[in-house]
Amino acid sequence: MRPPSLAERRLLLRLGTTAVSVCAGLAAPARAALSPGRAAPDFTLRTGDGRNLRLAEQRGRVVMVNFWATWCTPCRVELPHLQRLHEQYRAAGFLLLGVSVDDEPARALELATRLQLGFPILFDSDKAVSRLYDLRTMPSTMLIDRDGGLRQVHRGYREGVEALYAQQVRDLLKEA
Image 1 (tube, rainbow, N blue to C red):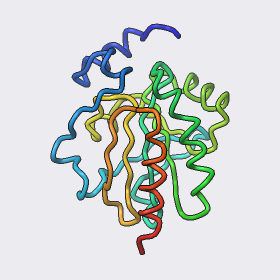
Image 2 (cartoon, helix red, strand yellow):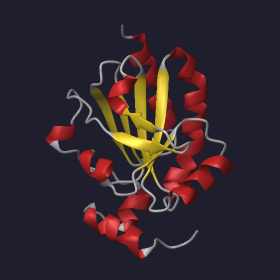
Image 3 (spheres, rainbow, N blue to C red):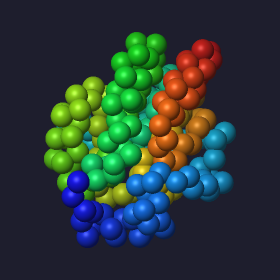
Image 4 (cartoon, helix red, strand yellow):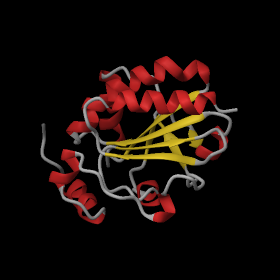
């Protein structure tokens, strides 16, 4: 594993955390503006295939937004679990969006290809969406209901959390 670049270290400092807490996946409380029960902040980001994808246009689907980076070890562990979740529930109206915060989108695409990720990969190179979602911990995962409401905020990764994700996705898919 390569050490974080200067830009990545600056991001960590800007996000108000240390590299140790980021990679350890320690939970950080969300600000009130990002708490479950409120509308998920809208954004538009470019995808790996060059299209723009807007969150608000995904209404009617259960959406999971996962913020990750190639330099984040817990992220690389979590991504294959997310791919299985994507495969299992996409036909039922579930959409998983992987938001890379890498400065170099090509590096994120390379990892996504190597891991055979089938869900859309989006690029937040300027960190505007990361700030919008008060990103302090990597990975961070948001679960959004069919009406665009933020329902769950998960900070960090712990082994086995994918079972909780699956249950939360199933519960939201059952809602009318």
